Amino acid sequence: MPDEPLTPETVPDSLVDFSPSTPSVASRHAEGTLVDKYGRHVTYIRLSITDRCDFRCSYCMAEEMTFLPRAQVLTLEECLRVAGVFVGLGVTKLRVTGGEPLVRHNAVWLLEQLADLPGLKELVITTNGSQLERFAPALRAAGVKRLNISLDTLRPDRFREITRVGDLAKVMRGIDAAQKAGFGRLKINTVMMRGGNDDELVDLAQFAVDRGIDIAFIEEMPLGDIGHPRQASYFSSEEAMTRLQTRFALLPSTETTGGPARYWRLPGTATRVGFIAPHSHNFCNTCNRVRISARGDLYPCLGNNDAVRLMPLLRAHPTDDGPLRAAIVRGMGIKAQGHEFSRRMDAPQVVRFMSMTGG
Ligand code: SAM
Ligand code: SF4
Image 1 (cartoon, rainbow, N blue to C red):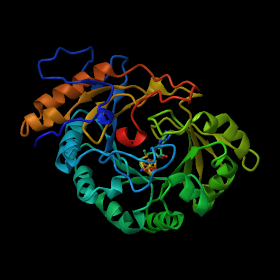
Image 2 (cartoon, rainbow, N blue to C red):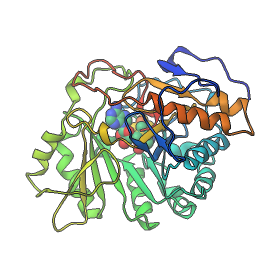
Image 3 (tube, helix red, strand yellow):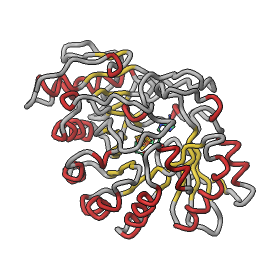
């Protein structure tokens, strides 16, 4: 399949083309698993199946976005091939994300195939919820284990303002449909914004309690040029905890979902509250994940611009996974020790949008 020319805004900063003969950059490949040069095992991939979205959240995207031409996006078959190779290398958890994964045509077909990969234990999705009313039962039947649903406000007018185009009622119906379909451990993801939704954090936690679901509060990250400064909207996890403690007792939990969130239990409820704090608490030393963008670039670290381009290998070797596998193994060698998001939010520290890499 021919590759279309790249536009400047679609070219990641530093891409590495690994051919099968490229010497290893220091990764170790122990007994069929992926290990980086700091000894961290990679067992979790986040696969972005589209950079497109039906929302335009103001912290995630610019108002006018240029999306990738179709030929520059992995086909669903290519997504499956990449995932299959990772699972063959010991990956046990796969999150499908985007952009909005459920706006990709035939996403459910892909999920069914992914769920069948031998060795994959957990198939999960992150979604904005807009399509859940329609797809929740099919996702469950396909073998999706858990859903993370993004929800930054409970107020319809504010929802429209933050997402620029979204309809809160539709997302609420989507959450209902997901619960009705039997997704037990739903989790709400809330990006905290000073002056945007910080006055609703307690209400959002209460919403999670009332629904018997989990909630994670996320600090805004400086990813992509969204056309306006982020400095003023940054809201820290510490401050959010203080707000929550005005209504709830927070009990530290030793539980982990294998992600960067640190969890607290709300006694007398089924709800866990997580805080994802890339600025305040560095979680890099236990990082077990890598990301694959919609155009097939392997990003070993969300907070770093280094990537390995997989699409040319997929297309040059349509029936031989060997070169792809070799590139993935070598790609572990460029996984950064840690990201350095500082509190400087006035300029993007990573050039690509979250929707590009897959949040
Ligand atoms: N469209 C889906 C959604 O919104 O859930 C999946 C993709 S979205 C990029 C994944 C998560 O990233 C969402 O929870 C979103 O709120 C979060 N996100 C996007 N941009 C962010 C940023 N700059 N900082 C922190 N979180 C961000
Ligand atoms: Fe779309 Fe998710 Fe980004 Fe919002 S956060 S614009 S829903 S990809």
